[in-house]
Length: 285
Image (cartoon, rainbow, N blue to C red; front, side):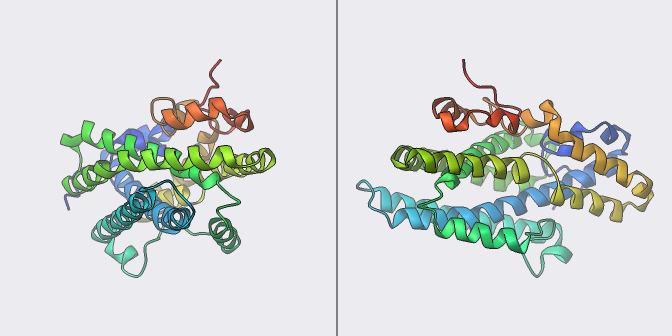
């Protein structure tokens, strides 16, 4: 590992959009970038192992068009491989934190963990997770392309992993679309509305604003740089304020980053009003 280089482009980190980021030294910015990159890998491991693999496995057991079951089996195998790649990379970056588990910054509330487990196990009632798969994999594809665009300035092992991820991600988005187009129109209207409300809440609470784990990344930075202790509360305040920062939101989800998801929001009326949570989305007129 080359710890003299950033692990991901600066614009993919939340603190980059806060004024206080300009007050950090270059060494502090670099370390924040590296810590946040490890958190991003945690997110992906959680998303692919705790959600995607289970949802896809259950979808594969349903009556599907010919050839779909084999394709989904390959999709699941690739998701497992991705999780292992990211797991091994995090252990190289922070061995003291990841020696005994996959998660250091993510602390899942036990109540939410049970709720997510219930939703995933009853994914026939909760097809909202197909929307989560699509929007997050579109964003992941954009991230991988950004890595390539900034390849000369990034750490080589992180870059190599993102290249490998990119090779599979385009096909995964295609499968997300197929499943969504098969299942969502067959879901009754009241159930679609319920799922859209849960999806909107999930996006607002866990996906589009740095809160719990995002603050733990900053806390870890201050642990490594004790001189930043007086600035900790201000950094937290500024990160939380990104919940209404349109520029930051557009770095996560926009028509450039998640075009297929946003095009579907335009079509389905149950997503009217989601722009109140996803500030990068403006309904097509």
